[in-house]
Length: 402
Image 1 (cartoon, rainbow, N blue to C red):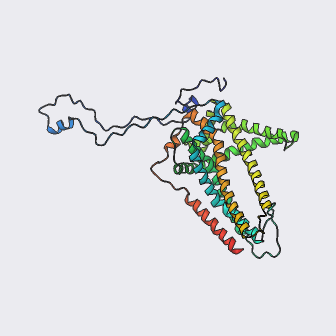
Image 2: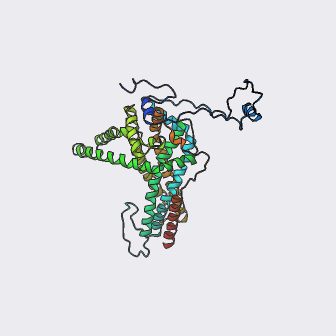
């Protein structure tokens, strides 16, 4: 039976696969403090006054809470309509997406920005420890200050910060889009708190899935490359097909961690079971994610090339005057911030189809119930603040040393 022939569940009801493998919180009736008594029953004249008072109808001790508003049913889209539904979900979450992208941009700027500015300061000072065109180490005669160690520490902070931004982009986008899909939008602060709470399970699952895909990809490359060549279009297509085939059972791992609130290994196991409901949809999810990553890498390369050519035409570089250096520095800062916002935007695009199908199949939003909506969590954790402060301090030392 194909995905299109499979009977659709009623609107607002999870599929059999989702209901079986991801628990859905039951809807409890509204609580009431009114005690049911039979007011028409006659009182015994001989009964004590205390008993008569106890049998009288009691007024509620507090006002009755109104029942929660009815939520719209969660739709289950057809496989052929998965990508249009994903783009529609992103458009409905436009405001939340913009704020979340600024948050990831700030994280990237605070961790990667000091490294970029430090390298720019080294180049401007004429004591470059690398070739700006190839980023290969060089040794310049007459260099009196060795800041390679400080640049190395900035590089470590930048790598760790970028990894945090990449992981949080996916978990944050899953929380934001999952709340919108389920009709329970959450604020950016609460989405960040949810993403931070599932940070390590997301890393564990990504590592396991990445190892499996890397092994399979290596085997296929060893077979296909001698025949088709490593850089041919046929080899790229074959690689994408293998990734979609092998990765389809892992299509719902991230949603299982963030929205289903299960561990990494349990999410992998349940993702296999949920993917069986619609193999075609799982393959589309993985293929779309792979192509999106390739497109963003191509876009970054093209954007960097255009920026460098523009600087060359305008005569902006290390040898330009104060105005040119100021413009280049501002553009560099803006570029690092834009890198973070672009990272989140692409992550949201890749996880949107997964969220649409996962929530539609399972209705599993237990992870949203774990959010304490009465709290105001911090945007930036203490380790993140320490890392940014250390990076800024190292940047200041580098500039003063030059």
